[in-house]
Length: 394
Image 1 (cartoon, rainbow, N blue to C red):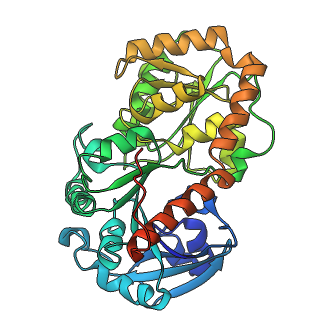
Image 2: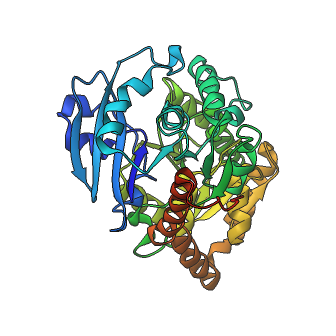
């Protein structure tokens, strides 16, 4: 089975394929994509990723997969709603002749390109929905543009794969013609092997972009409201200019500046160690289809504290592990955080170890690939007209 994935270029692949100065432009790990690799032997997998400002197409072999770096204009693509991107990807498509194209996301042109290059045999993956996210906070101009691209991509989508039930339900109004299936993303091996977190740690951890809608400022406010000087809060992630300074100012106003520590972005091994040094995972995101860091925390047995909404609430209820606070209620979040600091529910090691085992199995490559392969076979069968498509719903 020959499959082409379209996605953002992970920084690890950029570092392997490009000179250091060019690779430095790629800052995102896109962790769920490399986590799926290598593919099973029955799948010949190619991945095509945009290379803004690239001079010529580059190819690199990594993790049993051929990666194609596709040169695209350095700027201006979103202003045109990515309408010309099919032109840049077509040479790769013609060289590979894939049986299925799987677009990982709709935040760039991936979904639009997949649908146009392969009108019958495409799958559009949903990690996050711009239409849903943009309702929480003031959307920036690029988000407004890509929201239109997302609408165009999904309006005629035939097959959609979502990472959570919440993502599937939010997608249905945008993709009325699509068959939708939920397949959990894979978590990197650094988080699915080895010992879980230390049960006696007095550290909470936030992992995510330093944005209002990711809940970082609510997290610091709740932490500051809990009068327990033994605890520290580690903040992992970056944000727009001034975000780190704003967090420090807020921590100072709340009297917890010495106990709130900003670490920037950590590589997978270092992030796994930071989670292992923590007992509480604090992520009061306002909206999220399925935070990767929450899945990683569950795989290590760190106790999540989140708002009762969207993907985070779905995962906490699925595994029966963690504490949910009233949505967007910082006072209730502080109460919930204080309760878990006091009662330490993660120290029920039998329960914790069971959740760790379940989460690692759920977010594993061994579980995801049979489901993906089944979906791809159905797409191919329908495209060839060899048999009627089996209805797929979330």
